[in-house]
Length: 115
Image (cartoon, rainbow, N blue to C red):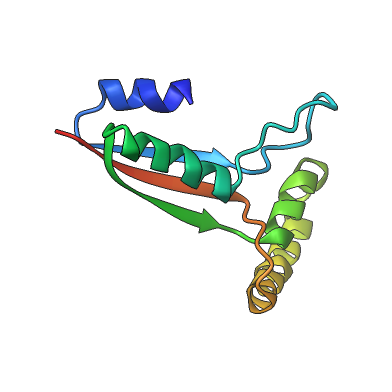
C-alpha cells in the first residue's frame, strides 16, 4: 500500500503498475503475499474514497496455463522446446476463458491521479 500512496504523491497525472501474480518460484514457504484482483480493487476503491485518485482500471494478462508455464520457464533451457509449448499454452488459455476460470499471470493497473 505504501508504494501506491508514494507513487500517487510523486506523480503528475497517470501511474501504470505492473503487478505479477506469479513472479517465479516462491523463495520461502511464507511467501504468499500475492495481489488478487479483489485485493487490488479494494485498495484502489479505498484510495478513491480518500480522494487520492480519480479513477483506475485493472487489466489482466494471461491465464492459468500461462501462469503455470511462467513457473517452469526457468527449467525450459532450449528455445526449440519453448516455442511449441507457448503456442499450446496460448490455445489452452483461450479455452480456459470459456470455462471462466480466473488466474491471470499479471495485472496492469492504470491510475488517473489528480492534477
